[in-house]
Length: 76
Image 1 (cartoon, rainbow, N blue to C red):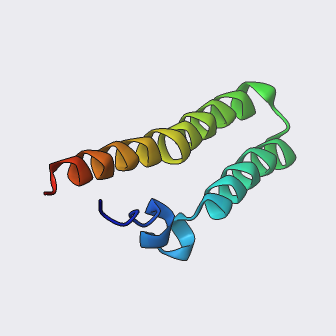
Image 2 (tube, rainbow, N blue to C red):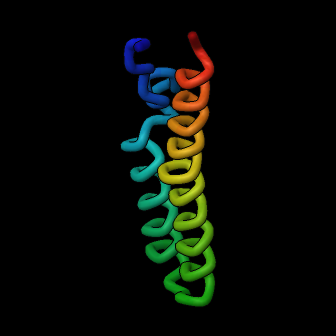
């Protein structure tokens, strides 16, 4: 059996870590509301941030884990 693989986050630079993704999204939504105070602008910004979070914090790590699992299963 092979050793467990690295986490995807160990391969990413500081600006692509979960904390920086969450912080940047929260700041984008807060800034939109603070600066414009229009819910009809802030709501789409928040929706885009949520999709961005889902993509980079859920889908990409799950895909990486599946790929690593498949690679480990193929190794002799």
